[in-house]
Image (cartoon, rainbow, N blue to C red):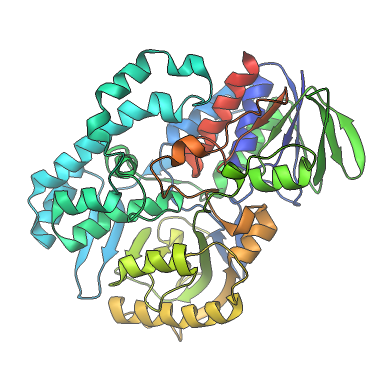
Length: 486
């Protein structure tokens, strides 16, 4: 079968590899001059940053895809497990390191925050059990195919239903469990993994800490972009053709069946089409004549991001690979993100510094700071004013909390905001994860990986089932591959 894949994000590349491995002829069409979607790089003045996703979990999902290309190509993708997942900082001087060993992490919490270690151990155990219960049905299969619901996985899930906390919020579950504001905040922050608010997202989202604290965090040699490079290499070794600078303008159909695509004003016939493009512009731009369910397309968007790529002179001794400087106004921050669509003056700040662990990321005596604050989706705000104000707030927070002089040590700078995220990646309104998960029904409302009334049309990526982030995008590609194979 001749298959077109629209978009070369991690899901599109993974889908192309899986389909080519089955013997299909696959062509990937990418609008940009480079592959990878959000998973690309930024380079300036001898500094190199990962442009988008900076946290790597569940590396086995990447390995699984790359291994499909062996022995046609040598799998050169190498990564290491980190001894700590994150360093946390608060305004009052409290510092907590989330060690890779969960017992050590739990002991650190008891020492620094005064919460008995067994409470953390129990929370991580419950997170693992919830993941094992929901993953086979909610993450690894299509929720929209009846046979997938009529099996043992559903029965197993139903038996665990009372423990899923589906009708409670993440925050209420964590508040009941921990009763310590800092630890509640630490566990609440996992809602941002898919661009949601812990004060609205279902308690089932407390499954997320399992990925970081039980499975662990990892760092690819060469940085996160090595994932894109390895997937491209694997795809090409299987005969996948990747056409860059090739924006698709329309998906053509006839008699409720895909017939091909229009790219660079030329019709190209295909037996099946997989869209790795955000589901909203897929419908509005590529399928304008097709019915689009407003209940799906008009859902609340996930948060976006404001990212400062800073080349910094000096050595920040307190910081590791992943670092979070918490706001003292956490609930206010999320209300601003999802209600007033604004940024507060004291946002939570995430800092990623790969040059501490990888060579060639920054000049001698310097560090590459990837500095991110959660931002609202783009609705036409005055971003230039918001960026300037937030930049100063972030610098002041870093200097205040870490005691590191930053303002005079920024050597170079690039900025990514919700407008440019949408422009570069096609993510509707600049949202990083498609729709938010700020409702217990969110998992059921995500768009399926297929279109019921159009044969041979499929969807993968962060804006459709099972959701955003590298692991779920890879699973969406696997689901599409299995749907096509049926």
